[in-house]
Image (tube, rainbow, N blue to C red; front, side):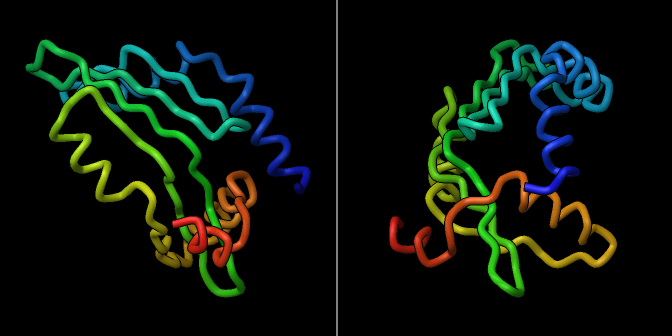
Length: 132
Protein backbone atom coordinates (compact mmCIF):
# COMPACT_ATOMS: atom_id res chain seq x y z
CA UNK A 1 0.00 0.00 0.00
CA UNK A 2 1.37 3.38 -0.98
CA UNK A 3 2.04 6.18 1.49
CA UNK A 4 -0.81 8.21 -0.02
CA UNK A 5 -3.38 5.43 0.38
CA UNK A 6 -2.12 4.66 3.91
CA UNK A 7 -2.59 8.32 4.81
CA UNK A 8 -6.10 8.40 3.35
CA UNK A 9 -6.98 5.17 5.18
CA UNK A 10 -5.79 6.70 8.46
CA UNK A 11 -7.81 9.86 7.78
CA UNK A 12 -10.93 7.77 7.12
CA UNK A 13 -10.44 5.87 10.37
CA UNK A 14 -9.90 9.05 12.39
CA UNK A 15 -12.78 11.10 10.94
CA UNK A 16 -15.48 11.34 13.61
CA UNK A 17 -18.92 10.06 12.57
CA UNK A 18 -20.59 13.29 13.70
CA UNK A 19 -18.44 15.20 11.18
CA UNK A 20 -19.49 12.85 8.36
CA UNK A 21 -23.14 13.26 9.36
CA UNK A 22 -22.79 17.06 9.54
CA UNK A 23 -21.22 17.33 6.07
CA UNK A 24 -23.69 14.84 4.56
CA UNK A 25 -26.65 16.69 6.07
CA UNK A 26 -25.31 19.99 4.73
CA UNK A 27 -25.05 18.51 1.23
CA UNK A 28 -28.36 16.59 1.42
CA UNK A 29 -30.40 19.45 2.91
CA UNK A 30 -33.95 19.25 1.61
CA UNK A 31 -33.42 15.68 0.35
CA UNK A 32 -32.56 13.53 3.36
CA UNK A 33 -31.15 13.68 6.86
CA UNK A 34 -28.41 11.27 7.88
CA UNK A 35 -28.95 10.28 11.52
CA UNK A 36 -26.53 7.35 11.92
CA UNK A 37 -23.36 6.42 10.10
CA UNK A 38 -20.58 3.91 10.62
CA UNK A 39 -17.86 2.75 8.27
CA UNK A 40 -15.13 0.18 8.92
CA UNK A 41 -12.57 0.24 6.14
CA UNK A 42 -10.77 -2.89 7.42
CA UNK A 43 -13.89 -5.03 7.88
CA UNK A 44 -15.41 -3.60 4.68
CA UNK A 45 -18.73 -2.75 6.35
CA UNK A 46 -20.91 0.33 6.29
CA UNK A 47 -24.16 1.32 7.99
CA UNK A 48 -26.28 4.34 7.18
CA UNK A 49 -29.57 5.51 8.67
CA UNK A 50 -31.28 8.33 6.82
CA UNK A 51 -34.72 9.85 6.71
CA UNK A 52 -35.93 11.12 3.38
CA UNK A 53 -37.35 14.64 3.36
CA UNK A 54 -41.08 14.51 4.14
CA UNK A 55 -40.94 10.95 5.51
CA UNK A 56 -41.22 9.94 9.16
CA UNK A 57 -39.55 6.50 9.17
CA UNK A 58 -35.79 6.24 8.65
CA UNK A 59 -34.19 3.93 6.11
CA UNK A 60 -31.41 1.66 7.40
CA UNK A 61 -28.83 0.26 4.99
CA UNK A 62 -26.10 -2.26 5.83
CA UNK A 63 -23.35 -3.11 3.34
CA UNK A 64 -20.92 -5.97 4.03
CA UNK A 65 -17.83 -7.13 2.18
CA UNK A 66 -17.29 -4.70 -0.66
CA UNK A 67 -14.18 -3.97 -2.66
CA UNK A 68 -12.60 -3.03 -5.95
CA UNK A 69 -11.06 -5.62 -8.23
CA UNK A 70 -8.59 -4.49 -10.88
CA UNK A 71 -7.05 -6.01 -13.96
CA UNK A 72 -4.58 -4.40 -16.37
CA UNK A 73 -7.23 -2.29 -18.09
CA UNK A 74 -10.21 -1.77 -15.79
CA UNK A 75 -11.54 -1.57 -12.22
CA UNK A 76 -14.66 -3.33 -10.94
CA UNK A 77 -16.78 -2.69 -7.85
CA UNK A 78 -18.10 -5.70 -5.95
CA UNK A 79 -20.66 -5.56 -3.14
CA UNK A 80 -21.13 -9.04 -1.73
CA UNK A 81 -23.97 -8.32 0.67
CA UNK A 82 -26.35 -5.42 1.26
CA UNK A 83 -29.66 -5.16 3.06
CA UNK A 84 -32.17 -2.62 4.29
CA UNK A 85 -35.16 -2.34 6.59
CA UNK A 86 -37.35 -1.48 3.57
CA UNK A 87 -38.62 -4.33 1.34
CA UNK A 88 -38.49 -2.24 -1.84
CA UNK A 89 -34.87 -1.30 -1.15
CA UNK A 90 -33.96 -4.91 -0.31
CA UNK A 91 -35.27 -5.88 -3.75
CA UNK A 92 -33.11 -3.21 -5.36
CA UNK A 93 -30.03 -4.16 -3.33
CA UNK A 94 -30.54 -7.84 -4.23
CA UNK A 95 -30.12 -6.87 -7.89
CA UNK A 96 -26.71 -5.27 -7.31
CA UNK A 97 -25.24 -7.41 -4.50
CA UNK A 98 -23.11 -10.36 -5.48
CA UNK A 99 -22.27 -8.90 -8.88
CA UNK A 100 -19.20 -7.20 -10.25
CA UNK A 101 -19.76 -3.76 -11.79
CA UNK A 102 -17.27 -2.11 -14.12
CA UNK A 103 -16.19 1.35 -12.99
CA UNK A 104 -16.24 3.62 -16.05
CA UNK A 105 -12.88 5.04 -17.08
CA UNK A 106 -13.24 8.80 -16.65
CA UNK A 107 -9.93 10.47 -17.54
CA UNK A 108 -10.32 13.46 -15.20
CA UNK A 109 -10.95 11.10 -12.22
CA UNK A 110 -8.34 8.48 -13.08
CA UNK A 111 -6.10 9.36 -10.10
CA UNK A 112 -9.03 9.14 -7.67
CA UNK A 113 -10.16 5.82 -9.13
CA UNK A 114 -6.62 4.44 -8.80
CA UNK A 115 -6.47 5.58 -5.16
CA UNK A 116 -9.88 4.04 -4.38
CA UNK A 117 -8.86 0.79 -6.07
CA UNK A 118 -5.77 0.64 -3.86
CA UNK A 119 -7.77 1.41 -0.69
CA UNK A 120 -10.50 -1.14 -1.39
CA UNK A 121 -8.44 -3.74 -3.24
CA UNK A 122 -9.72 -7.32 -3.16
CA UNK A 123 -8.53 -10.53 -4.74
CA UNK A 124 -8.31 -11.00 -8.48
CA UNK A 125 -11.32 -10.80 -10.78
CA UNK A 126 -11.11 -14.56 -11.45
CA UNK A 127 -11.37 -15.32 -7.71
CA UNK A 128 -14.36 -12.96 -7.43
CA UNK A 129 -16.18 -14.65 -10.31
CA UNK A 130 -15.43 -18.12 -8.91
CA UNK A 131 -17.17 -17.17 -5.66
CA UNK A 132 -20.32 -15.87 -7.39
